[in-house]
Each structure stands twice: as structure tokens, then as C-alpha cells.
Length: 209
Image (cartoon, rainbow, N blue to C red; front, side, top):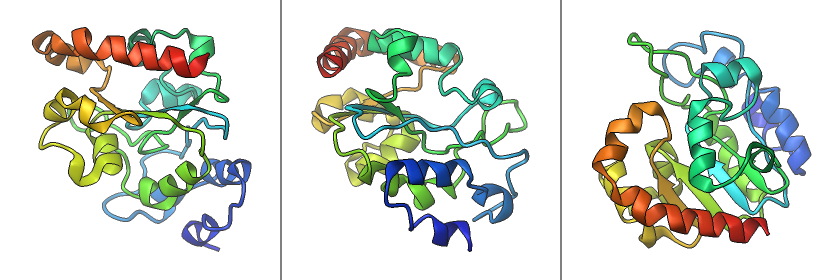
């Protein structure tokens, strides 16, 4: 039975997560382009009780090696933005972590991460969120998550989408990626720290009580 047929059968979140962690779509049945250049290692954390979801991009090299999402400097910065420690961040009963692509997509010619694989979201994403009924805040990190969740409501650029963050509440909060590659963006857009941080930390604290 193909992965696309199997993934319709999960009736519980645990069953769905088991299927996702065994997925090999991008290695054996790629939609476009080349198969995944390494062994798949889907990374996702979720529980029905979670009230917050971190919707990121895709695992990087360190996350692929450890199997722990945001286990890198980007994760340290994101936790600082949210005002939480590692133990809280990795408590999946409170915070789900559902990237757009569950596997590390590989590196481009310049050594940067490739975009999330195109097979992943169509195969799994809607099902995952059907099993997360208690979510009240979804952090949309980067343009890929913003495009999928916001659809036509997304602005023409990531900057404009984040600038209009109030338009997407209370459920969605668009954020830039916390990567060091966005250091220049953060310096140019000081309003992000001044306006978004207090709201983000307040909402996270409220939902974690």
C-alpha cells in the first residue's frame, strides 16, 4: 500500500504520528525533482492537549542529526522570543511542533537549507491539525508556513505579513524565522521586537498557565 493511501487510515493522533515517522514519500516517490538525498528522519512533536503550535519550515542539519526540533541557535532565539525554557518548549502536551516539511531537505549549492519538500504538507498537514483540537495559538514561522495557513490573506512579502500580524489573531501569529540569516532583517525592523514580543510572550504565558 502506498504512503498516500496509508495516510488516510489513521484514526488517532498516535497512529498518525507513527505513520508520519515511517514516511518515505520524498525518498521513494518524489512529486518533483530529485529524491531526498539522505535517509528520511521525520521530526514532529504533538499531543491533543497542546494549546500552542510552532509551525516552522523544515529541520536543519543539527535537527536531522538529533531528531530534536529547533535544537540549534535558531531554537534558542525562538525560545527567547516566546519567553520559555527548553523543558517547557519540548513539553509536547503543551506545545506542538509541526514544521512544513518533516525531514531535512538537504543543502543548496551555497550551503543553505533547501525549501521544505513538496510531498510533505499535502500528504500529512491537514490530518495533523484535525487531531489538534485545542490549539489557540499557531506561530507561523517564515513564508512557507504563512502561505499554507493564511492562504490569500497572506501579504505579498513576509515582512508585510509580519507587519500586519494583528490581522491574523487571535489564532495565527506570523513571525520571521529566528535564524541568524535574518539578523539584518531584525536590525532593520525594530518594530518587531517592540510590538510583537510583548504580545507573543503574553499569549504564550497565558496559554501555558
